[in-house]
Length: 111
Length: 119
Image (tube, rainbow over all chains, first blue to last red; front, side, top):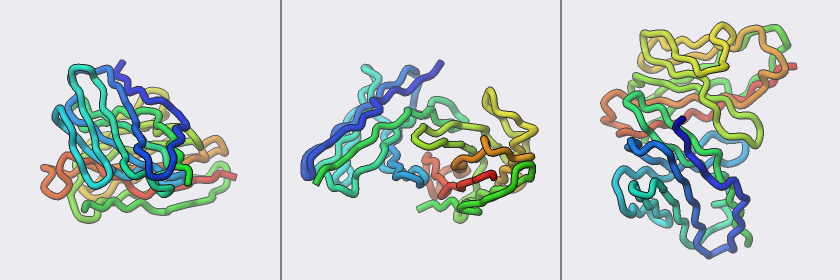
């Protein structure tokens, strides 16, 4: 069974600090990796996508992928209270673009 | 960026009636659409994968006769909850993937979601 694991949290981070979110996956054949942010009662919103090993930066967000260790992480620099949300890790493993979802990590940024 | 529109945003229906939720890709053609259900404080649960012009593929445990999915065109998929019951009350979300990825790349984009309350 293909699985994506995340710590459910909540992860509490002071405003201005770096928030680090982690995700591991079971299928070594996974090709694409995504981080989505979901506010309570809203639909998921794509934050980052990453396809190759290493780091990918976009503004305050950095996605890190390590296929050998089968983990992907998301770093949020200069955390803001508006970053408080549930962050969902999703992995694509097949050609039909079906995503395998983690359960999400609830992030709380404390002013 | 790519936009996926879902309608209605929220709906209240009586137990035993049916309700239809629409999912439209506004600026790209979607060969595949996905339907999810999410209960409060729980993760997304994939219900079915819908490919244009063919029957939807349902996940284990999802009743295909209760949750009717129609993907009649490259920009529209519908989910009909038939004979709805209070336990069907949930947040239903669709997502879509573009053919060829010219506009949205390999990304899957989500609709805004539809809150269904069955009373």
